[in-house]
Length: 339
Image (cartoon, rainbow, N blue to C red):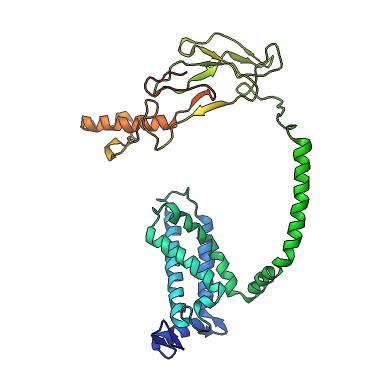
C-alpha cells in the first residue's frame, strides 16, 4: 500500500517515526546520524589500511584492529536497518534502493554481513568477496554534496572522453606494431659487468657461456642439494678453475647455452608423499617441538617422540631446495635416482 514500508509500517508508525527522527536529528545545524556514520567510515578505513594478512593474529594491535572492524560492521548493519525501516526497500518514492548511493552502501554492508557469517576462516569465493570492503571509503561521497557533484560530473563526461580514449589507443597500437616489427628479438641478451663467483659464466674455447656443475646421481631425502660448482672461481682472472667432481656428486654437467635455465626444486604443500617430500603432520603429537634437546623432559612417552619425527622430517623437507638442471632431469619417486 502507498505510504507503507515493508507493507506493514505506515508513515505514522512509532517505530518508523523513531527511525526518521534518528536520520534527521540535527544539533546546531549538524546532522548527528550522518556525521557519526562518516566518522565511523573514516576510522574503519584507517583500520583497514593498517591491517595486512601477514600481521600476527595474536598481536594486541591486530586483535584491536580486527575487533574494531567487526564493531564497525555491526554499526553499518544497524545503519542500513534504520534506513530500510524509515525509507522502505524499493516500492515508492525516496525508498532505499531508489538511490544509487544507497545501493553502493548496501553492497558494502552485505559484504560485511557475509564476512561476519563466514568468519576469518571462510575460504573460496566468499573470502575473495571480502575485497569489496575496499569500497567502504566511497561511502563518504554519498554524505558530501561537493563530492557528489564531482563524481556525477566525471560520469557525465565519460561519453565525450571515450572518443579521445579510442584515438589514444589507436596511436599506441601503431607504435606497438612498429616496435614488434623492427625491434623483435633485439633485446634477448644483457651485459653484466661483474656477476660474481656464483653467477659468473665459464668461458673455455669460445664465447658460449655455460656454468660447470657437479650433479649427484642419487637424491637422498635429507639431501640439501644435488648440485655444486665444479671447481672454484678465480677472482684475479675472473674465470672458473675446473677440478674433479667429488664422489657424492660425480656427474659433470654444463649449460648448453648462456640462457639454459638451472632450476630449484622444492616440495609443494598438499602434494602426494614421496621419498623426497614426506607427508605433512596430521595430529597434534606429530607437530615438531620448539625446545632444545637438553630441555626435553625425560618422561615424554616414546610414541610421542616418534610422532614428532614425522613433523620434523616434513618441516625440513619443506625448507630444502634442490638445485638441478631443468631439462632432461627426473627424480625416481621410489629410489631417488636422478636421470
